[in-house]
Image 1 (cartoon, rainbow, N blue to C red):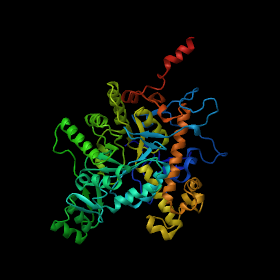
Image 2: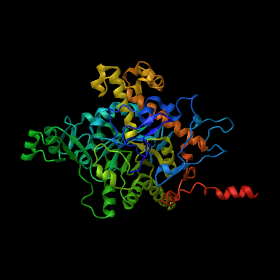
Image 3: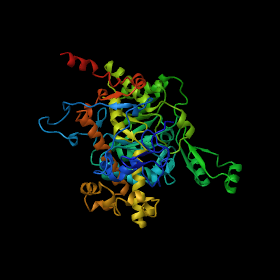
Image 4: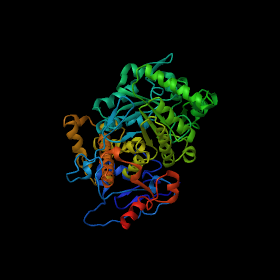
Length: 542
């Protein structure tokens, strides 16, 4: 594992655990009392972009030596003239003039206010407990959110018979929460795995919500190359999950397991999902099965379909890009190793798959090869360890012009955790309902104030957007997502402005440079002093 600094004195951030490339801790806790960069940004928004204690300090960066291949080993280019994509180049321009709107889709276009989306928030209890904050926050900022796999299957109140869902209250709650504040920007995406397909999730969603929802097939993710997992502590719940058709480990029906549970030696059960395509052995068979699935989804009414794939090798990456493009899918999300987890096996996370920057570099190469043959390339979203505006810019440039969004998992969840904890501490009567973990505000929060209006730099922005009467229904976790998106948006606008790019579709691979020769070799991004060197010499020789 790379060793990244645990603290940044300039912005006042400190990691509770081991820091990784994204600036998050390896283990992100819902009850954390601070204060990594994303945690602080979830309260203070764009304020965290700047050095603290203005008027008493000066600051200097030491991040000029780049070792190894990662997004941190890329540098962002700037230009000293021009204004590509600006609405009016005759006026003085500021970074706030940069337009961050994006869109994706083959035929029916989905518009987004910002180029951010969530990773799949599925059957983990974290996703269920903090869903209101995640969904409301993403709807308010106009970002897509993904309901992950197995939500129906693990819902005790869901009714399934003969492969058809009769009732799915948790899935409906998640969709309806987002749609309450949906204003035409963003999207609600429902992901399906093998069990979801067998349980009839697609048919149920198509009948109840129609084209309001994007349906997503899942091939994998960056955290693991097996099916999804959750952990349960109740043997009754474990038995219920086994009855639903899941693999549960250890088997809660075995006599020795029941005895061990009763005596306290067995305290938890892991629920696992099945692998897909296990009856296939060639890529031609995979293509045929995939196309049949897409045709069926279109037949039952879905106008927008997406695919999520993980950090498999180059064959699987090429298949994902080629098949998704041929099927005219609306979005392909590619999650590199370094992506987060709810409960993936840790040894697997540390050892398997293609690191994000390498996966994304090859994705661009393969997409360009497809485009050069005259074929349409599916719109893409890159995922796998993003939480900073700088790396978001680099990823958009790495995949340009095909990359329309950056997918974030844990980074977009932190505001929900923090908001619930603040709300529960300030309003004890709400603590249980919002799943707050604090009895009182820690100093890292109370230093900013004792009320939501003081603590959240963007509170008044949200209130203006929804109205003072509706504000009472907005979870503080949603205010946190607005605040984090404010910071990420401002960071991206500033970097784009410096590169003289005032619309997202103007970003190109020419806007980034490799900080070392190894990164240049692996990504195809030129070394920083080689880029435009010949142009520079021509200027000198004129």
